[in-house]
Amino acid sequence: MRPIRRTAAAACLLALAAATPAEKPLLKPEQVKYLEDAKAAAITASAEAEQELLHIFRSVKFRLELIWNGLGHNAWKMAFTPATELLGQIKGALEFTEYTTNFGVDPTWRKDHPGEPTMDFDTIDKYGYIPNMWELRAAKSPLVAGTPTDQWGVMEAAEDGLYQMPISGKLLPAGPNVTEALDRPQYIAGNLRRIDIGVARYGSYAAVLRNDVIQDRSVVLPSDSGGWENICNSSVKPIQKWYPIFGQPLSRCKSMFKYGKDRPVVGTADNQLHTLLSNSLIFGKVGGSLSRLVYQLLVPEATTRRFETLFYTEAGVLGAVRPQDMKLMVASFPGIFGTPEANRLRLFCTTHKIPLAWALNGGETWSASMKNWKEWLPYVPEFEPVGADRIIDPITWTLTNATVKLPPLWKVVWDAVVAEIEARRKSKNNLKASDFQVWWDRIMAFGGGLHPMRHGDCHAKDMCSGVYTSYDGKTDCLCKGTQPNASSAETGSTFSQSNLAAPVDKSLRSVEVTIV
Image (cartoon, rainbow, N blue to C red; front, side, top):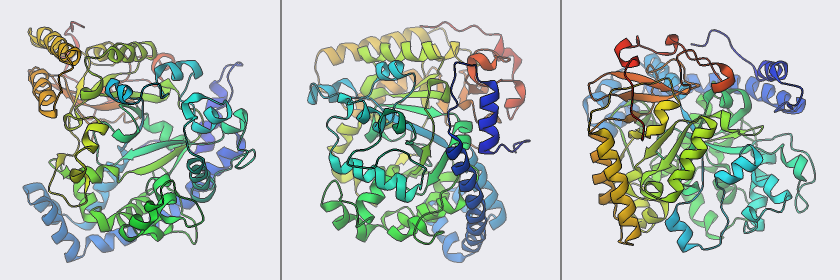
């Protein structure tokens, strides 16, 4: 529980007080007011949803569905958990939800799309933050030159109609200028099912944002706003004509504004029970029912179908998303590991003091996985683990609070795997998912796995990104900041032993780690 509740206005005032004369406030007064009003409405809607959820949890139908989803010991145990306790666990899970923004491409994709511009680390360094699409459009950036006109219409409809944001400047077809474009949001995925790479279709890199950034500067929708606009909004021209034809029979479009009249009541990080319930209603026809989502949120050994990885909530973040707003960078193991891009990635993370981890994502990139389109159908018997472990990159030990015991052969194994993957990529042999699984298992056998954070693991959810286990069985939270008392100037937060849910093992702190 947070000892002090921070409103969006208070957070903005603190940012103003701490700002140097050269800095500008991240939010305008009208944006601060928008966030305050949104939170007030979210509190009421979330309280209404809480009573509805308790009623559903007490039903025999819901309990049987929980057992059907799991069929394991934990699912049975959860099925007999009192409704109020179940609700408390869900609130805890939502408190520690990851919020990710994906970008960038892997070398294989680039070969298939020669000359096509994509967002990369040079772009972020150039701007000092991740520029939103409207800003790139106003600057006539080649990064968005290929974005179809209909896509801009979908985005603007979402910002004006679903989010109801105080956007400035001219609407389409003129659109905002560079300054006005800064008012538009960044679209962030609420990673409800703790997918290791976030939303792979948006890029090979997933920046995990600090939870306090989401709490102070964002509002939350039940689903992807672009998908809803394309499928459900008859006044918007869809990017593809078939979207509403196939999408509307499979979706419950009106559930987007279940708690409003003709527009949704957006959620906030700490008031989103109504958003969660609406999410389960929207996707209920294609496998995203409430019982399924609760099972995936709470049961450690839960699984997910590939199609379900698209059932995320969406946060619209106001203000620039800067490197200091990121607590972890995750990269695609099959897409980036063993390529020249991996070196650029490590340079970016080291420069900005962002911990780095790798994600297996089933051993495939997004483009490779989409070739097996049958695996992406609803209800197919293909399952992947929820909350799969990531691998901590060696540079991360120097950018976090952690030190860890590693076996003597760890560096040898790591170097050998890097060399093998580099050689296989240069030989142009087709790499399969099973190949990356073998390499992944070899590294994981020597430690360095990072398990996504769950409620009760760590108290410092804003700066911590998971729990790791050394090869001798010691566990600890991995948190941004190189020292237990790292200054806020370096890390954006103060780390102390009180951030941990369990006492720190002092022997773990004294071990030096050899860095590749």
